[in-house]
Amino acid sequence: MKRLQNILLALTFVLSIFLHLHGLSSQEFIGDDAAPMLLIDRTWDSIQLKDARFLAYPFLFYNEPFRSIFSGTLLHFFGPDRIILRLPSIIFGLLTFGLLFWIFKKEKITSWLIVISMASYSISPLLINDRSGGGDAQARFFILITGYLVWKSSKENNVKNLQRSLLTWTMGVLTMLDTFALLPGIIFAFFKKRSLINRKTFYLIIGVILFLILYFSAWMILPYFAFKLDFQHYLSNRGFFYYFSRVGEGISNTPLDSVKSLIAYTSLLFTIWIIATSLFIFRIKKFLFVNIVNISAWTAVILLSNSSIHIIMYVAFFFFQGVLVTDYIFKKYPVTRIPFVLLFIFIIITSTQNLFTNYFTISKTPPKLTFSQNIKCLDTSVVRLYTDHGKIPSKPPCEPPTTK
Image (tube, rainbow, N blue to C red; front, side, top):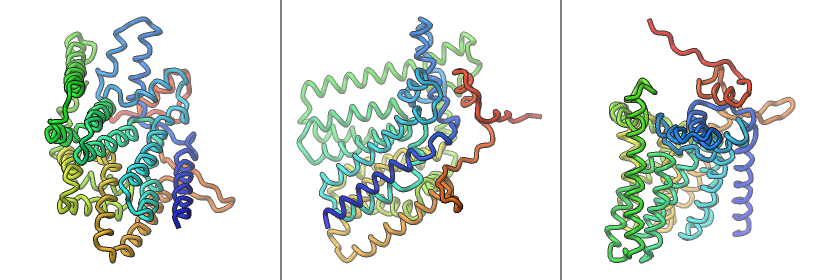
């Protein structure tokens, strides 16, 4: 039985790799991919042009400065290749698969649950987001590993897990600000284990605090001076100031938009299971620190629902806590085994249906799997991504909206 489970898990992983890579050259870039990559590309120009002012580029615009540091670097040296530029995100997506498997084995999750739950996660429209050139997959990875380390540090007298959680959290913050939602859990973990904090840990905390102060100061000061010197005509939607306005917009939106986005990238059943386990975890005392991170993440999702798609930054962590809760229920109430098996089977079916309805199509004669992307025109940043590297855009640019 164990051998069969390993074979099924390996086949799931191979299928996930195939779907991550298949038809990648036909997937056009969108603005969320292109804009942050272009900023990193311009940063590298500081070396070629011997002009340090280009180092300010990532801080001047509305993206997180280092969201696409890997893909942007590849863009600079290899040009706008649709496959190469997406490899970093795909690698992080596959690393998340491996990390989840390692965590579940380490936490002694029931074998059949590992297999069937991993299938429900990996063969879903989430892999389409992994195929993008942005930093979404990277953020998911760092949020997952940070949340796990926070929980482990609460269970074990191991100061290294505290240190690791702070470092992975910092790398996540540099990728996307969604990672900030894990800060209450980290603070709580350090407070609970304060007796374990040694001189090395203290210096690490001070170093991270000073680094982030400099980082966010640059993110505010550089756009401010660029605005004052008339290098850019707006301030409210530039640099870190952009996120102040997004907070106000997010609070005014409905949290249901985030739930709809999660359904779009998984399925309705998957979303219901995630929400149900997020609520049930309140009843399990041993998952206290998972619950702290869980509450913080859901608070960010509910209050900052603009952009609603950012709920998928937390989906790997939500999935991790969902499997923990499911395994706990199954072991405590063995009668729930068959219902849970049926639930995950239907989740796999509905997620796969969503994937092949909206993203992949299979032609009948001859049978062929192709990637579907209905893009009629290109965002301005995508056009620039091609033209700046001497390439012809595949589609015409989108006309800006006219105002009367």
